[in-house]
Length: 174
Image (cartoon, rainbow, N blue to C red; front, side, top):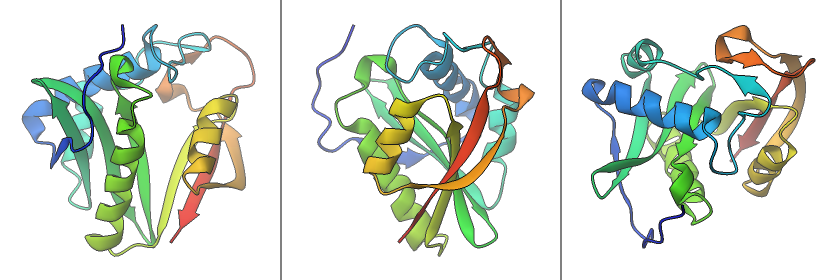
């Protein structure tokens, strides 16, 4: 079920440690649930993350989670971490019922602005599953380009249901 709401100016804030479980739940719903276009449930089983991993990310002094809440519901999250000369972007999730309404584009732009203005970086790096061409196309439309770096799918991200899964790295320079 898609919820039709006005997303013109969602309230975005930095996440707090007490929100780790809600963030983990959203990420798992987004990537391993049955709804939304970002689900990977057909190709990967198991959770994408857990509360402990999110708490560790939240405690990184060179990073933050941005979250958007709508009607007391966690609607979206995205992680930004400074790593040497670039910012790593990950854990990007939009609640399946709120997808395809512009919230993802908005949140990605917020993360990039934070990285550029607050972390002082001009390059953003992320990885995506190579077998997700629709997701790669989404990022290409946002200015990301493939780096040519492709690696075996890491086991900590879940258990592949198909063989030969890989991840590929994308980057954007501003």
